[in-house]
Length: 221
Image (cartoon, rainbow, N blue to C red; front, top):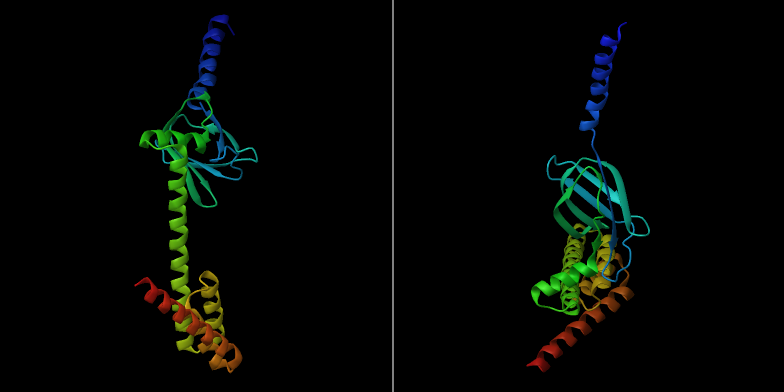
């Protein structure tokens, strides 16, 4: 075979081998996640959502709050940080290029300070606002659970399932020990089961709580 034929053939082979590389460009992503106290957020999920393809990749942080992955397609991504199913932070439009990329860190303490500066609040004031919102959300969830248990107890009593009525009323009392209606429902369930000592005890507590509430209203006037 002549050298005049071999050289062009080698050139074609070189192009064929190089061609796939232009389509296989990938990127690596990495970062560290920290909470409001500057401590690592371990066991959190970092979701990378491609704005170009819609593909989602979920990475998990280690004990140091770090995450890392290879094989990402270059493009723009929306990133969401969650822990125990609750969204902690998100950022949109992060550009990733082929090869190694700068770390995409999440530092909630710094983010809080930046947000506070934008709102004209101190970091401490913003933290207090956040804690107040969390407190309100917790109270609302407790009220919702309490109402559900009271409704279930009433349904149980109507259906004659007194054991479940006692269990649901007890859970309602655990959520709010000052709820007279829960003691009344449990007392009724105990009475239906023939456990009159417990029924009298719960009825007495319900009466005491209602009397205390009435007295408080009178004094408030």
